[in-house]
Amino acid sequence: MRDHTKLRAFVLADEVAMRTYLETRDFPKEEVYGLTAQMRRAAVSVPSNIVEGCARESQGEYLRYLEIAFASLRELHYQVELSRRLGYFRRPEPDDYETLLAETEKVLGALVRSLRAPNRTPPK
Image 1 (cartoon, rainbow, N blue to C red):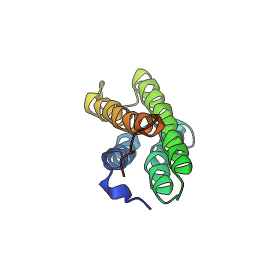
Image 2 (cartoon, rainbow, N blue to C red; image 1 turned 60 degrees about the vertical axis):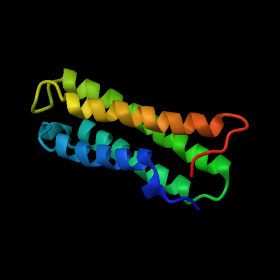
Image 3 (cartoon, rainbow, N blue to C red; image 1 turned 30 degrees about the horizontal axis):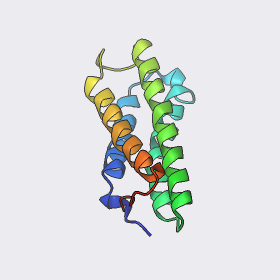
């Protein structure tokens, strides 16, 4: 089994989850069961799937959960962009939050690509 805490992708994904909860605190009350809940679910899904993948024995299952985590991250990124356009953020441009999302996408995407690449030893 792999130690998820040693993965930079997990550390960043955990930070994304925390930031998502903080950033959505002040969203409109009518979005509590809408966009706020959806963003929080997607955000928690990212580190959760990384953790679950690390607990799997086979490389194929590990990769599958990382791909699910990546898909949830992309979903969240869209929802953040939509929320920004709707004016839901306290600050008009949540640049550092979107920068964190982009960095997490790069790191997690690179991990997924490295596991897909033939004849390569994947990172643990």
